[in-house]
Amino acid sequence: MSPPAMANDGHANSETADLAKSSCDSCKASENGNAVGLSEDVATSLTEDAAIMAQYHADPMNVPDVAVPSSQPNRPATPQGPSTGEINKLLTYSTIASNPGGGKIRYVFEWRENGVPTTSSTDFVLPDNRVSKRNAWHSCGQGSGFGVRVKFVDESGASSEWSYFRPVQIYSIPQTPNRPQGPDCARINALCTFSTSTPDSCSKIKFIFDWGDGSRYHTGYYNSRETASATHRWSRPGYYDVRAIAFNAHGKMSGWSAIKRICVRSKSECPG
Image (cartoon, rainbow, N blue to C red; front, side):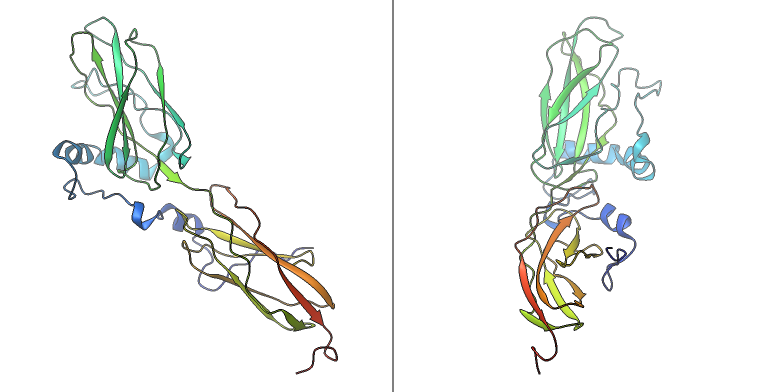
């Protein structure tokens, strides 16, 4: 049987919390509405979204669906769709709105990536009918720099208020780990150390070392490109193929690494 899952020194526990706080350092968007490089409109919208962001972090599964303040009767429903998604994969979001002035409306979806907005619009449709749009994010991150909001425009050109902002966390599938590094030969019951790492990843990842004898070792979380290490000993002589695989908290796994073969011998066969 495989030994129980263990974590390496300094990398155990607080795994979910660690991941929730992580994203590519190069992909992190500033949550400061006055961040350098953002237009005044975008900076203002980031500030306006502060309340909904606070609620999202407190309870991401219950972001408001329809805004009801009497001062904003025309605000469309907060876009509904996944709160997490894979980089470069299309995600679908939907919304609905009423038009007190009557007549058809078209919806304008604003997609934020690293704080930079782009928009896409629907055709003119009757109000009170749910519509949807798809979008793919091409970098990873989370917070107010990544997400979607929507407004509508009627046939006269009059525009509604923007909906509340829907934050989205964008992650990547871990890349295949490097071939484990370790000794070529060892004595029976000698403790051997093996290490591996992955190329760039958007979030923290765990590793599983497969020792080739029916047992495996689960590490704790590691940062992108950080080297993960694990130890093992074999009780019988023979050749064993060591390999590793990486996975993240979203359940996405890499492929298995190339194997590292180790020859385990008795003391008499492996002196010194």
